[in-house]
Length: 380
Image (cartoon, rainbow, N blue to C red; front, side):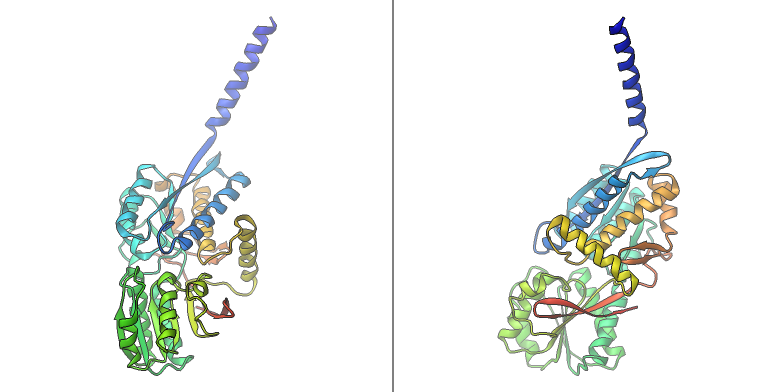
């Protein structure tokens, strides 16, 4: 008799367990960034931002459509390469992810956007700033940072109006991001009545800039702008010092990292570098960002490089739309995601316009003193 009771109890327990399991909803979030290659430190920073968000969501116990959600992160490496980027995107589509946060670079985000669009999977980039990213008419494409028109243009005006640049040189790395932000910078300089005395280009894996810097040195620039990433900007600063070019050095978010002083190997003069991050918080919002940075450092024993908080917010914005739509199915929550308005994130308030761009995106201007990044101002 006891055996029968035990069997019945066991059967009921199994049924209850099965019922509980059937109430669990597995939600796969894809993340793509360059976790290998020259800018792996930035890709890893982004991925850790995603991991932190996923871990917190699971600890919180989020319910979507009456089912407890279990979030899984599917992380891919695109090495900052467009071909690898589309391959990574296809891999995530094949894995039937519910949404994607990434990619880091504009050059990988733009071609990957078509892959996600064809599959109907929402994609939020935390850091792709080339305007083309949201201008291809895809309904699945969003970003949580201001674009290069705003970023490059603002830096261009700043170089003339605040730094009082009289002869400005421009270099870019020929990537979608680098060339795009350099073009917008040049437009900003000209709109402010400034003069561009030379335009040179390199590539995103170069280490020797002697030829282009020597060419620019003859034009006596007082400001040099570089459109590209910190892994190239660091050696460029070292070689500027060797050649005796004492110009101010400017760049977009790609150079505006905690690693730049190390990559420049102590050759940066205090206040020499002025850069902008495509985002920013001030006043009350600064408290949330500072708390995030503290939490991130405590968990991973590394400082935030640049875009981890934007990845963290992007994951949470995706999930907030799923919760509101009562579904993690892309087709069902995508219209809700597109109408995101007034979401309070650690990077500020997130609302999307009809293109998927963030409304009223901020920029933060920085310089470096004593090897540390210091905020100059937040501008909109």
